[in-house]
Amino acid sequence: MVNVVVDAMGGDNAPKAPVKASVNAVRDEKNIKVFLIGRESVIKEELSKYTYDSERIEIVDASEVIETGEAPVMAIRKKKDSSIVKGLNLIKEGKADAFISSGSSGAILVGGQVIVGRLKGVERPPLAPLIPTENGVCCLIDCGANVDARPSHLVQFAKMGSIYMENVIGIKNPRVGIVNIGAEEEKGNLLVKETFPLLKSCPDINFIGSIEARDIPFGKADVVVCEAFVGNVILKFYEGTGAVLKNVLKEGLMSSLKSKIGALLIKDSLKDTMKKFDPSEYGGAPLLGLKGLVVKAHGSAREKEFEIAIRQCATFKEQRINDKINEKINVLN
Image (tube, rainbow, N blue to C red; front, side, top):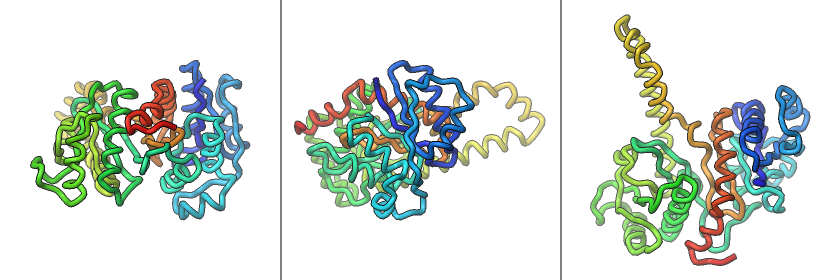
């Protein structure tokens, strides 16, 4: 049984989205147990709307909530009875395998490292979201956890991202590229120039060289390596561009009677195509390299994103991702 803690208090759509997703996941997957953590009265009220297996959904009361605007370190220290702190402690105590939240990113990142702790040998745990490409998805690593990364950190990111893509997503021998301002090896800032030869000489990964930002949507690499400042800019620009294209397309299709008729004819095909650029299709972003799995979902995550994230947690455990990370960086617990 895979034990997953779901924060019922975090994000714009709590508690409705995380609770409904938990009910769906338990209904569809027989090897998952969910601990819904947060204010017990609120969770009970939401759960009362559904029929579910009460042996596989358990409520854990947490009286406090860490708000998005709070200083992460202080919030983790002071709000010991918050859903984030209590949820992460369940992993630390070995009572759960994974924790999912769409709450405060800073608190989740700080709490993951301070409470759950890093695997031995892991220098910096990176956030690794999946982003859509022309051919499927790629892993953008790191996208928000380590703004001032060193070359050795990026090498570990590449190794962990490769393990994740091969074992959870099913891409054999994933191609690894480092984000750069050109394809030539001599280009880039000091971090990229120092990291490039380390990746090139690393036998554990399938390194294909530099990748420019414009090549990412075309799926030129399966693992896109960068430090968190660059990764977060890429991620946010990606999401913004997708939203704008959707709006512009909708406006164009509704601009005349002729276009409206055309829109009606292509409605189903267009809907399937646009789903590829919906963040909810890819679950949350795992914080790799911790002693347990911590997943950050979008602040606006809806039911579907939570449900996919819960299933990903099960795959993560079944595929022994943490054991493989230990093996890849040649460190034993």
